[in-house]
Length: 365
Image 1: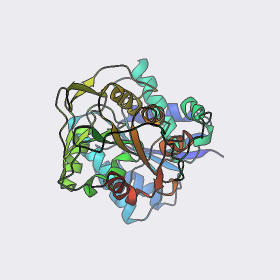
Image 2: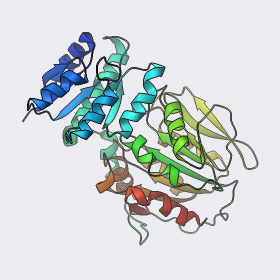
Image 3: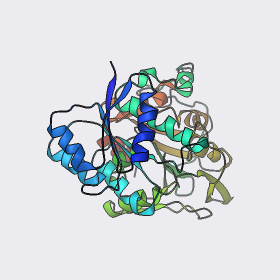
Image 4: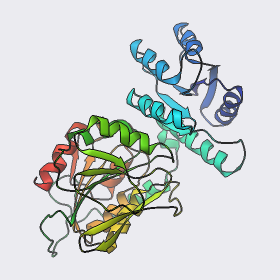
């Protein structure tokens, strides 16, 4: 059965481009289009039913944020995918839209040809399928590969692998790091994780959230407003410090480079995307192999795909790693946590609201 899509955008060109993309895909059809939130509400109030809504942010009469608020007030249970520009004035509104319950967002392309447009098409369609519960028809090579990982050497705790015969340094400020990996649903999920970290936390925290360039500064700013611990967007060349949460830059690869005994420098670089991801959690974890960091405490939150699993598996072979994953019931998309579980690297699978307390308990602070 085809899934019905409503497109809400004040640009006639974007409505046509998205309609052409969607109507060319299996199981999807554009049922209606609207030029703003007011027109979209008129369709909904008239009894029209849709499986998903694609909405712009900047629109006359009723913008995307107000449209989401109205949907919430009227208790419409329809997934909304934000299709937003990279304009600086729209980034904060996009983060607010995600807070209000939008499924995810896709950055608008600058044109209708070339690789950027093909990437937009792929990202748009994949998220529509996921939001409509049709993710089983999507081919995910990385996720399939996880199924062949050995599930041996599990700890008695859920799905966790243990490394025997190795001795690790006691947790200390200069050899311990907390890492959080997340994707679809992550910006909202992080609001249930980061604000619960105490202000005087003894270790640095790095968050690898899949986002395009231009949006992570707004995400960091919003999380900083909500938290007692300092939250900032990571900067190339800065030295990692305890008691700070660093949000890896969107559109860049984030790595850690050792600059001295217990001194680690953030590298925000232009290395190629892996699996279409910049930042990529696997790449960040791999960068830790050449550092003296011995203790890793990691959280894998909601998200599409299998990012973080391969990197964590590698780290488990070299370092003292404890992994907490968000459970299926509280995930927007149970992709990354599921892949981590299949890879045998998860020590605890818990509801979102218990992620921070479980991590802190394992660290012992």
